[in-house]
Each structure stands twice: as structure tokens, then as C-alpha cells.
Image (cartoon, rainbow, N blue to C red; front, side, top):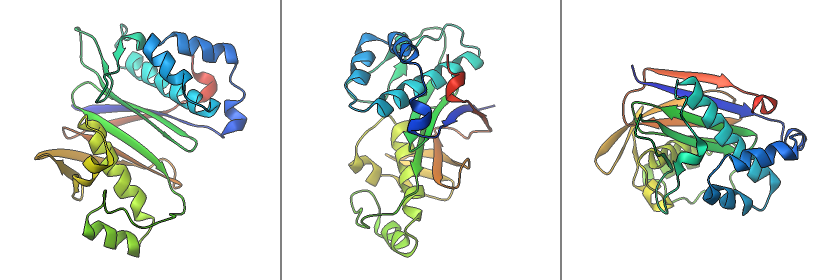
Length: 222
């Protein structure tokens, strides 16, 4: 059975983030590789730093609950191009992290490559996305502007799962009802309904039989 573990936090913005003890935040940073610590330190806003750190703590919890007792955040490699990966000879774990608005998500899978994306639905300031959307998709968006977020989320999830980057690559994703194609490879899509104000999509290299979803509070992170 191909299963994905999806853990998420839905916080209340700055009122929640400001309550996290600064010493705990520093402990979270020290649990990472020096390179990742430096990357998080370069984030200008406290909110961005905490969101990134919380996503990694969710990832660690996912791995632990999957039985990977040897999982260590310091063992994650961050290549110059492409998605991060867990450097381990004893097992496989693909993972992805996403955050938008007040949502933080971490997804893991031991049998497929995956990508996850969450987008907060908000008013669109422009309707010209020719680099990312096909002519047919642009027509759909003009008729139903909020559809943009679902299409964008699906394309970004596929691009992340395929270990590639860039807006131009999102434009290469061809969407079908429950699947997508990129570079002649098919990706399975699954929409995750957690909050009507957000769109969440999962892309996987194989059919996913089960998504194990768990909500965790910020205060529950160790």
C-alpha cells in the first residue's frame, strides 16, 4: 500500500507565533545542519523563520511516526538545485514542506516521490499568467478567478514532486482530472480538503492509497 503521512499546523498568525519561546526556536535551529541554519537566519521576518522551522519539526514527527527512529534533520542534504533529500543508506523517505498564510504542512512517503502545496485563497490582482497557464486554463480562470489557486497548487505540487524548479516548468505541466503530465511522466494528483480558505494539492509518482492526516498544535512541537 502506498501511503502518505500529512501533518499540519493551523495557527492564528502572529498571536500564536509570538508565544513560542525564543530558546525553543534556537534549539530548533541547532537541530539543523549549519547550512540550513544559515539559510533560515537569512529570512528577514520572524514569522518566516518560525514557519520554516515548524515545517521541519513536523517533518521530524512524520518520520518518527513512520518508524524511522534514525531520522535526523541534520542528515538532510540541500543541493544547489532540486529538492532536499534525506541522506540515509538504511531506508527511503521522500518529503515535502509547504506553508501559506496560517497553514504549515509536511508530507512524507516511503514508496513514491511526492510534492505538496498549500495556497491561501485571496483576491487576484491580475489575470495574466501566460507563463504558467495554458490558453484553456486562462479562459477557465477568467470565468472562475478562484480556480487559479487550485490550478497553481496542482502545478506547483507536480513540479516539486518531479524535483525541478521555476515558473517556466509549471507552464510545462499538463493537468487532467486526477493526474498530470510533465516531461512524458504521469503524476497522480489528490486534493486535500482541510479549510475552505485554502487549496491543498498532493502530487505523487504512484497512486496513493491512503493519506494519514494529523493536525498538530504549535505548542505540541518539541
